[in-house]
Length: 192
Image 1 (cartoon, helix red, strand yellow):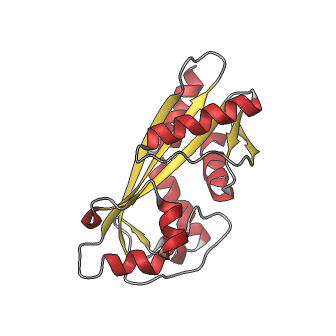
Image 2 (cartoon, rainbow, N blue to C red):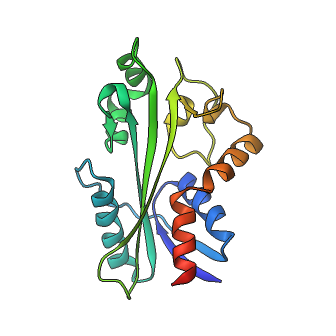
């Protein structure tokens, strides 16, 4: 089984990526490194800095992931500054900002991979469309990536991610997998 190191402190991301890659015979080895958070609104640039840092520390084939959250009626805010927004204004602040405005939003993800054969990281990107609920709904679980799961309703669903049962969440995730960064990466690395 091929092993890929995943540098992150987010256990929810490790769980999601591990399940996706295991279907291709790829084992994810979790390295809970504190990674630099470059100040940029470019997901690819942030993922690049993270994977370069991780590869230097780990010295083995590794991945790093960066995600952004984009509320269209707020000109994309908070973009790549999700953690900052959650630490300062929180979920309630974000919901107040969209009061009376369209609630369409999306998560964007960029996975960066680096090994000894590459001079630059390889990138794999995807997005998940949805809308914001009027108030937080559901409860946080260990396998969630963010508090935003309390207010994010995926396109075509009527529940927030945090309202879904474990089975509903897994079903939704498997449907999303078909066009995800994880599948794109798994198919690419399987051919490498």
